[in-house]
Image (cartoon, rainbow, N blue to C red; front, side, top):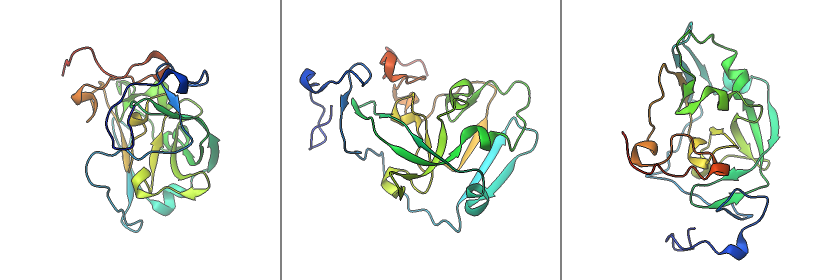
Amino acid sequence: MLNKLGRITRLNPDRVQPDAPPGQFVTDRFPVLTFGPTPRINLDDWQFKISGLVDEEITLDWKQFNDLPQITLDAEFHCVTQWSKLQNTWQGILFTDVMKLVTPKPGYGGYSTNVALDVLVDDDVMFAHSHDGAPLTPEHGGPMRLVVPKRYGWKSAKWVNGIEFMAEDEPGFWEMRGYHMEGDPWKEERFWSSLTY
């Protein structure tokens, strides 16, 4: 786990809780882990593009995107660095409601932002603009992030601005650096045993 200085430390077995996936400890905080600078996104300029193997590519602005049906969802969040926050209330738009705006063409292969389509169409996957009653801060992926509760947090992409349907799975930023292609916390799919990309 990460200590206060950001160093990797050994997991304390006394902090492991049965409600968390194997190898995780539970925290009430929502740590910020980001690679590189945090973007500051102007909502007047924000756009969301649905592209790739779809019948017709579309682009939505912030208002159009937020005019889609809104939901509130309670879901866990599991980080690959071994912490889990079990109580989160997210507000936003279900992935399946966004997907209804297009018709994927045959051969799209079921992958978007390196997450399998069968995972994305689960009833708890959403594009969130708020967390625990407040707009998402830029540090936590605001104005909009993907939330995939049944995967490690790096699959819940921050600052999301589109989805692309692809014929074949391609490794994303973290997967090219050794993170697992699936990222299931209940199977402890943190890293590949060897890099294959």
